[in-house]
Image (cartoon, rainbow, N blue to C red):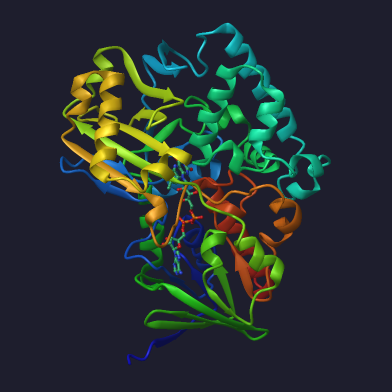
Length: 458
Ligand SMILES: Cc1cc2nc3c(=O)[nH]c(=O)nc-3n(C[C@H](O)[C@H](O)[C@H](O)COP(=O)(O)OP(=O)(O)OC[C@H]3O[C@@H](n4cnc5c(N)ncnc54)[C@H](O)[C@@H]3O)c2cc1C
């Protein structure tokens, strides 16, 4: 049997996603001795950028940055990771009741009654969202009503227009990779407030999809990790954590780290798969049993040119009954190659996960051809990423709350337990679920640890 090496540090961070790396960066900035343990052979977690055969940068995970994601913007500037605008010129395509329509702008003006209903519904939901306190959603005045129902229940009781219901469902799938029936209404409202408003969540211009990174989003994690150097240990999945008043002993494959505190920068569902001794308080443990991850395939099709632009299309599609319910133009800024990116989300992704990959690919290409012509069925490369099949992620974009979870378990989401501290985008108050939220959570957890270690705040 190989004896695991033992290392000492003041703080050990579990997970080298954006949250864990940000926590370590903050701690290093004030001279704290920190080690980061990462399960994979790479950093970045849910950001993962690769090169296609022709050299085009492809983001298999998180990719967009919006104007109010200021932490992410500031860090990208500091690290020299540059951005460019998402291609958003030309006609968008939308299917309503199976019929194809084209439009420009953020909200389709195809059927004035549907548009009115969508605008009215978004206004109502935004007003409700602003009543949800971001640091304690379970204290919202209407918590009993809002956390006892799903978003689907609310939609069926409050939105009569079928077109508006379909559009709202597409938006929910695109934002959560889950179905309206999966989500607590309270969680949906919290999430919208956390990102500013529903409009910001779903928009390209002035919204969460406004810009992309030239080098791919993972460059941010890579550069933070480079600055941390050998303090980041790859291929080190953490299995167990012993903790008491004196500190922690964190057991990863081939290395054990002894430290005064640990920041666990994992989605709650993965934090719940570690073995803790002593066992965690029931509220925290049961929270980790109740925050499922969404289900999504992110699919890229590459072409020699973005040919749809010549036909006047933006590359953006929404289709309620589609295999890929949303499509974007993910070509490089210079348009040196053409890239269509589509998401298979929620129920559709769940259903396709048990079917033959070749059948799935054929269905996706058939749909792209229907949207943009036969050329779209002949990509030079087809790249598919299924996050629910990833051992160290288990689904995406993030963990969400079904009904009742915020109310009964919400207080356990961030509360430290002795020398255990919690980070990860799921614990963020601002841009929860996004890269920006991951950074906020890492900085917050680092400050909590510093307060305990007796150092000045970062
Ligand atoms: C397809 C997709 C599209 C997205 N699009 C966007 C977008 O456009 N804009 C945006 O802002 N956000 C987007 N997101 C969300 C964004 O990527 C995440 O919110 C963010 O990257 C989460 O960072 P994190 O550090 O909290 O978690 P993670 O990135 O999940 O980091 C956790 C880390 O812990 C590691 N780990 C897991 N288990 C263990 C263990 N036992 N021991 C040690 N290490 C472990 C993992 O390998 C990982 O590196 C998207 C995500 C996906 C998947």
